[in-house]
Image 1 (cartoon, rainbow, N blue to C red):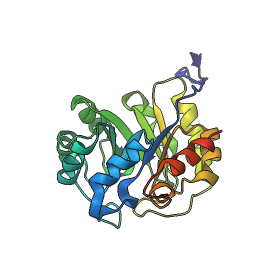
Image 2 (tube, rainbow, N blue to C red; image 1 turned 180 degrees about the horizontal axis):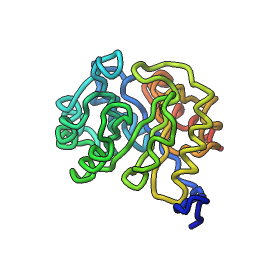
Image 3 (tube, one colour; image 1 turned 135 degrees about the vertical axis):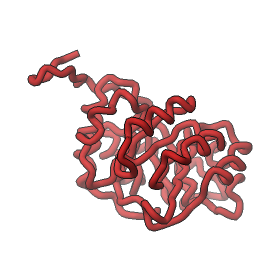
Length: 235
């Protein structure tokens, strides 16, 4: 472990983490959502990404614990829940009971981030913190040892199909440096496709959330080719 000039410990050695593909079901066919979840996992996805929106913190509404609990029976894959809701704390237990394995809250969504992260871990789940494009990585420096995942939003949250924001690459590098050798996943969400995967993985990201790049690229009802295209683009 190295030491910073101000006397505080700093872990500067970044660790290569395994690449994980986490399709966002926001882009799936909601009329057959259970089948879609099973199919994408069978075709090679590592996690299932659940974008929960409340129409308040972000300008869209998606789904909540009742839907997630119904989807849980279709697969035993990791349910990676991204809460774009405010406040989040009153609902953390509901999402845990619904079957979410990882629960990510936004730094911007409430005044007591440390408490939120502690609550998630006390529920027996992995904790995550998400940062909007305009939020600096320094905002989570003092809770870094309470998180299992950092999510860098590479678009503004609320809608699928947006274009990747190039300026977020530097944030990914900063988050990767902050993580150092800690066992923390570094996730990116927004505009992830084969043409952006190389840049984000080179910057340090290892969990790729992709919606239209997977669900919009089905071949004969299969997602294997779309998932493999993302893996092949890793640097």
